[in-house]
Length: 196
Image (spheres, rainbow, N blue to C red):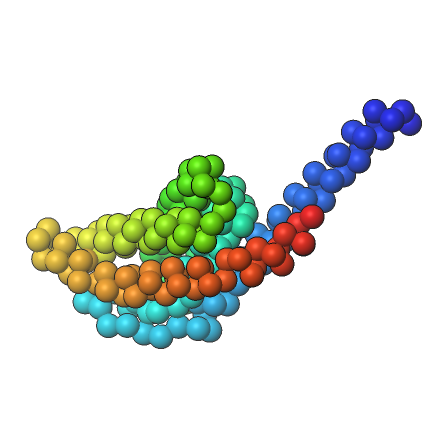
């Protein structure tokens, strides 16, 4: 084997190992999202739906930050989608899944844009997660509006009910911002060692 072939084989093996590690981390984040919402949730009153406080959104955000646009965008959302399927929310699952993908994409794009300019700072994480929370508020409003309209409400009452249901999303969003801001740097140190 020539030195060039050896280098190419070594590089190919390293890329394959890193891809395998990313797949393992994506599966771990999906499992964490599912377990965190399944076992750690508290019901919150809302006029539409049955929302609850949970830390699953923080797992979605952390997955997006650590794993990037591909694996990160979908891993946390898949975990929350599995929760919906297992717990009788199958009809809502596609909208929830799409909303979580949009949240992860928004968060990741804002993070990347700011990181290029100022580097990987904690306030960048907080701003990026906050942008994801704003997207979550928007997608949950649309989901509530659609749900109320399908149930037969006219537009104005449907919009009002969807808006008042956002309190649960705002509470979850605030919890997500706090948790991700606290967990990002310690977990980054651990995960950086794993992915190397």
